Image (cartoon, rainbow, N blue to C red; front, side, top):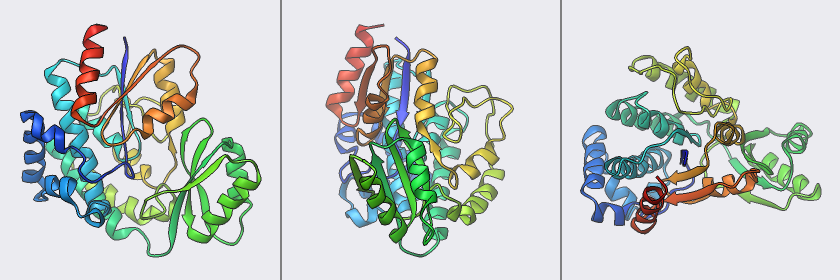
Length: 313
């Protein structure tokens, strides 16, 4: 069994996330308390009780998702369950980097707090939308976006085979969605996000984040984490400041991340954190060899995963 951890990003949050885990495990309580202490934000209260509008603010969303994922990882560590490789979607890449000790816990948590604040404050004002297009290949979606001249829209997330997220100005995104349907898309879903993430429109955010990154310590090494920006593993020669600052204004190549993990022998994918979105991406990859897909976002499925992994060791 070769295990790959997957860490979700913004949009996977739900009110009450992590609450049953907090009530069951002391390690989970310790993580929530530690994040509160580091950031001065009561992320437990926001995650468990909201209100939803507060949880959905970018600065809170990112910290809430990170905290739940890190808390689950602490329980897995007690059981000596670790990954052979890992990847995260957008924000989730930071969780993976903390898990692999590229950033220590406090540095990583503070960095995500600052990233959320920067994205909340410096995302340009306007009517922005993101939409997931299912059932068209990447090239077709790119052509549709290029064909729209009155407004800004580009592919932002290459999630999995047959699913691309587009991002940009609302009217242009809606127009691209209509054209996608006319060209055979099975479904177009508007996402619950607050800006034109992973596009050049976040260049100001990128510059601000770069200044934050330049002031922190990272343990650059040959890593087990796969980069969103190109689907390749981090190496000791990578400029992590440049990569992560460019990360928020460049497309996420998550299809490539999943393919890299599979090509390196990962046969068990475990999604750690709220939702099941990344698990569904793995299924849609339709890999040739059989793989296991599991997800952990509550006590019940955490215990199921522990049992499954320990049985197959």
